[in-house]
Figure 1 (cartoon, rainbow, N blue to C red):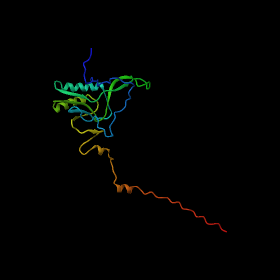
Figure 2: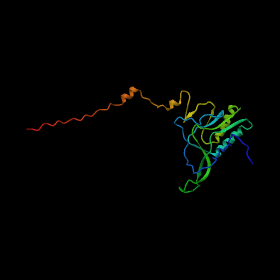
Figure 3: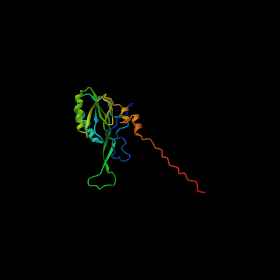
Figure 4: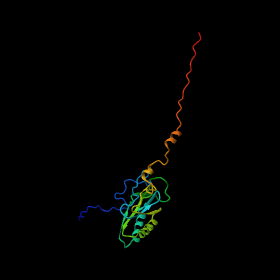
Length: 207
């Protein structure tokens, strides 16, 4: 049976990678953008979002699925669109209990996602009241590890843990924290002393 032509690609499973892993993943830590990148910290498609507020969190695919089902259960019967901004593409390998150290990482256990601080997890769009969406995200955040916050479309992006706006710009974050005036900087630098070695004059020999 032939499939009908479609210009859009098939939806991928966000709870596991398509091709698996070629080698076992290390535990690792989420990358924290300190060079000025704000990717993944703002709303892209929806009107409201759920944001991670903790550092170095690894969320399993089962926990992400439970959070998604919690949102759908709270918004049952309403018209909305839910967007997932993270994917579980990191394999977690464990060894059994009472196993001696060494002999490899163990066998595959589950898929997980590394979520950095200030990263958006879910986005929601629809004709819904803000308080209803807040309640749905509150219930979903209780099913996930760490602390989470509510974000709306148009909120300022975040660099690391610093939110832009209210006088804080990307240029000001890249600037050095303390700048010395030109006069003060010249006074603190001592002048280099030139060392002179005395020349010994030998007396002429006696006749």
